[in-house]
Structures are given as structure tokens and as C-alpha cells.
Image 1: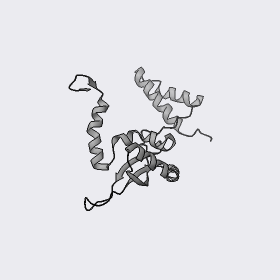
Image 2 (image 1 turned 60 degrees about the horizontal axis):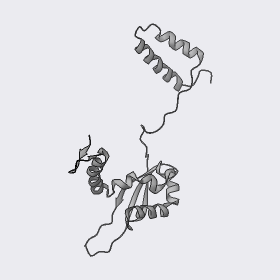
Image 3 (image 1 turned 120 degrees about the vertical axis):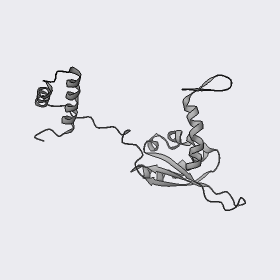
Amino acid sequence: MAGKRAFGNPVPVSDLATEILDPVLRKRAGISIGLVQSWEEIAGPRLATHSRPEKIQWPRRLHEDDPFEPATLIIACEGMAALHLQHEAGEVINRVNAFLGFNAVGRIKILQKPVLSQKARPKPAPRPLTEAEKSKLSHLVGKIEDDGLRASLERLGATILGERKPKGS
């Protein structure tokens, strides 16, 4: 559902969500939603698929008169991407600072942890069934009268058998 502005033009839901989420992210993680959304452009596609910015950690200032010190950008990274990110840290810092418009980040801290959820990871395709497996499966579900149920059970059986190693291997 899109909202409307005072002048009557519809607004995309993503813009409304950004207006709501950005202050929360800034308060909790010290990071803007724009940085998270533009991470692929900042880090490059090779690094962005295996990393994501977690938060910006600002140094404590005891007084308002204390000089400005750049923050630490904490980045979650997977496996070998951590090594690549460490190697390209200077360039990533420069790109983040260019994106933010000032010298906000002085260093990067890398956290090695899974970045992609299990849902986002591609699942391996099951192997094709042998003729003997296909005939055994169709014999097992052949007596089921409901066509939809029979087809569903046959697909389920094919998936289960396809994930197992074939007999004799």
C-alpha cells in the first residue's frame, strides 16, 4: 500500500519503509539504510555477495570539544571473502567515505560469520532417478486415487531418492 504526499502523488512503499527504518538503523547500528542498499556498488559485486556492513562504531567523546575521530566500520564476512576484504580495506574505506560525503570511517573490523541465510543459499539439484527407482516409486504411489495427492507424493519421493546416493556407488 503506497502512501500519499500533500501534493497527491503516490509514493512507493520502499520509500516509506526507508523513512521508517533509516532512523532505527542509525540509532541501533550507527549506519544508514543507504549504505546497506548500496553495498554492492561500494564493495563491488565480488565482495558484496559474501559480506555486508553490520554497524559503524563511533569512538566515545567525553566532551564536545574533543576532536573528531573517524569511526570503525564493522563488516560481516564469509570465509575467503574476509581475506579479500582485508586486502582491499583501504579502497573500501575510501569508497564508503566517498559515499557518506566525509571522512567518517578510519578503519574496518571484520567479523567472520555466515552472511547469506539458508533460504538464500542455492540448494543442489537432486540427481536424476534410474528407471528401477522410477518404476518402484510409481508402483508405491500407484494405488492412491487422488491425482493431486499421488503427483505430490511422487515428487516428494523423487526428491528424497534423488538426494540419496544411488545403490552400488
